[in-house]
Image (cartoon, rainbow, N blue to C red):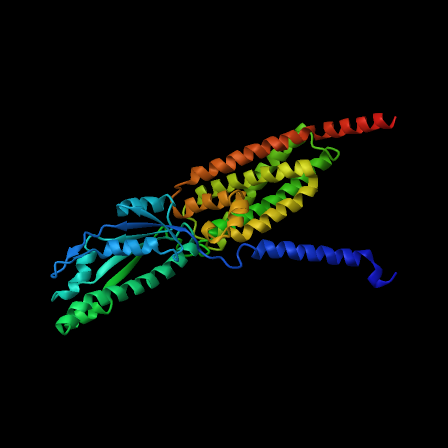
Length: 392
């Protein structure tokens, strides 16, 4: 037979082309150009304003608030709050990636350039690093540029009286005039060192899904072999027990290697292990539901779910295309595992219960689907009997 006439050659080419298309969209479709949009940021303006020697009222904080909130080019969704404490509480609850705080003496210090002892005004930017380091890094790069432009406007405004009076600046005034407003940046819920750049929750989730998927396939095969290629009630029980053992061992090995050998910073070892075990077993139930009904025909679905979800997990949802955010990120089970681990790693467990609840509900539904697969042989036998009667 001619080399080029072999079906396997052309079928293989078609198969490789399909795989190339699928994996290109899986890895690059949602992440090739991640752009922040509508990032939730809190804004606290406490500026009391000041009356200038010219009797003119000045409130730079309110002017800044108007400029920021009306600027549609900024990738922020502003929430106006009346206190710094509320902003910090919102960041503790992971409602905001950052908060900008304008103090009560902002205008007074800005206008002090005209006094013999000028003082530099200072705004505070608080970054919520644990929420998503990629998004927070983007915010940290945008705000200095914003304040560079603001400094130019304030500088021009404050120097006008000197120009009119043709009065020279003192050394101290000249120093402050060059940079009348400072932006102080503080970071809370820091990801710290040895956390994979803040991506430890994502990486651990990916590892436990893969190890659990391999475990699910092994256990499914063993149960079917033990019961003549079917799953009986006792086999289903063995499947669950083996799944619990496999996931417990997998989670322990992964965490031990990550923390003990690779020096990953784990703030609460047993809390992390407990959640990894819980998430792994929920993953096992999800995988088992498909395998028990579809057999190994369900494996491509589980593999594609992983490859399509994997690239988006490290990005903030506000950096994803709307299609990806709605049709993938909003429901993928990996998201709840990542956020649960993020709660333990960076937020002292705040919000952990919500993610456990969602994973638990999904796990219960999948457990029911796995159990219903026990009637599959009965349905198949009924179908065969009906076919036999029709033939006769």
